[in-house]
Image (cartoon, rainbow, N blue to C red; front, top):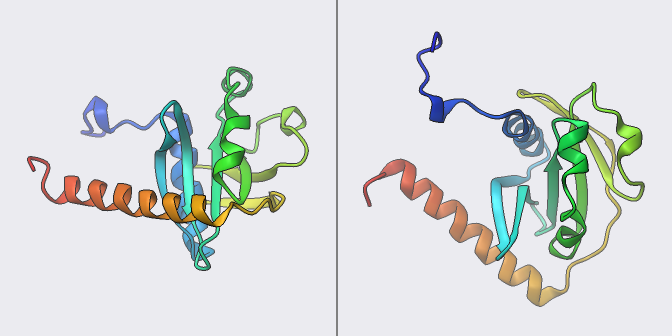
Length: 149
């Protein structure tokens, strides 16, 4: 490859959107993990934890076909206080369901066009999920620091 990157370092379009979203979330004082599994059978593109303990899910859709193939997003609503779609500026946003948040993103930045409605998580689920996010992030960091551990 011309850039010197190996194939495993090439990001897919949805992963590029997730990177831009994660950068934007940091500006809002949120930390995030990508490709997070809140429970078996569910994998969200970006799970974000805010400074007051709020939890957001952001699903990144790179094309109409990508969106239309996603029948699981309703199941993510029970795992967050707010739900958002992240798409690029060419995405036909009229396809996205009302009553959800909207973020326009690219690989480097993002902008929120519509805040997702608030539906507060129950306290017990928030606690479990916050601990799971912390462990997930710590394990990823440990793997980066010591890939052979």
